[in-house]
Length: 83
Image (cartoon, rainbow, N blue to C red; front, top):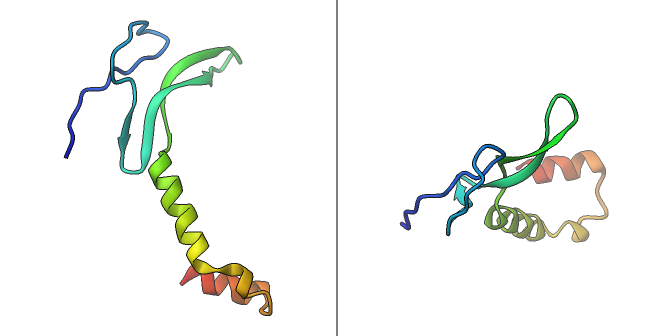
């Protein structure tokens, strides 16, 4: 397992470092543009889905081969996907 310290750059931390993002439990934490209550933009350290997690989800959906199930109703298709 690779361990590293990430610099949590946001509006209050202006510095920079080699590692400014990290992946944890399927999320990628990195500096992102956000909006405050007064609708002003600022940079915050926020999570979103990681590239590897998104790739795995797309791969799983492709394995369902939904294009081969065009003969069944939508409710049956939802039941098939839920399994």
